[in-house]
Image (cartoon, rainbow, N blue to C red; front, top):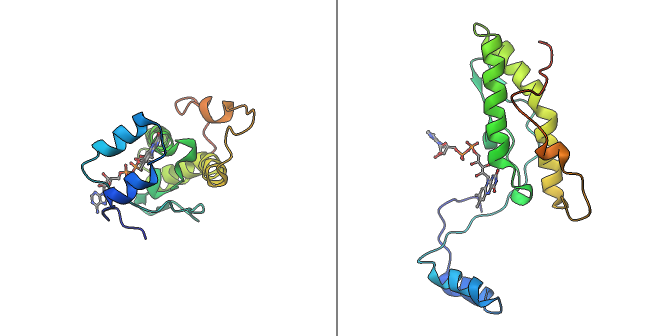
Length: 143
Ligand SMILES: Cc1cc2nc3c(=O)[nH]c(=O)nc-3n(C[C@H](O)[C@H](O)[C@H](O)COP(=O)(O)OP(=O)(O)OC[C@H]3O[C@@H](n4cnc5c(N)ncnc54)[C@H](O)[C@@H]3O)c2cc1C
């Protein structure tokens, strides 16, 4: 089920949370309506661009939510893509290829780690996630 608009059953939701803390139940009881959607795993795509078109964010690397990095990754993409375009304003295919080369490994690692749903379950150095600065991360050479 991949619908984003399927409505959920409030009674079913409330029953599922019946044993939870009162504060949780108050939130659930206050919901006027709910929607439901599947959590879908996706593997990295073979490529993100074709000619004058390029993907970024969820379209390029949809990830499960367990690391809370989907929007963060989309914003990182936007910064890196803007840097690549700024350095090759007349050559979009080259800028797009460089963008993908700069971003693929990191986003695939987040996709894979998120898929396992193990991030921070044990003592973890999260520096590789939170220490990344899209404005200063080195860009690869043009291929
Ligand atoms: C419940 C929930 C909690 C989340 N929590 C976090 C979090 O804590 N931290 C985090 O980093 N991420 C979080 N995310 C993930 C984050 O929301 C997404 O990764 C992020 O929104 C992706 O941004 P995007 O711009 O790639 O795609 P989207 O935000 O999906 O934007 C795509 C846009 O394109 C529009 N669109 C689609 N088709 C067309 C069309 N044909 N023509 C024109 N427009 C179109 C859509 O309406 C949408 O506005 C969460 C997601 C959910 C669902």
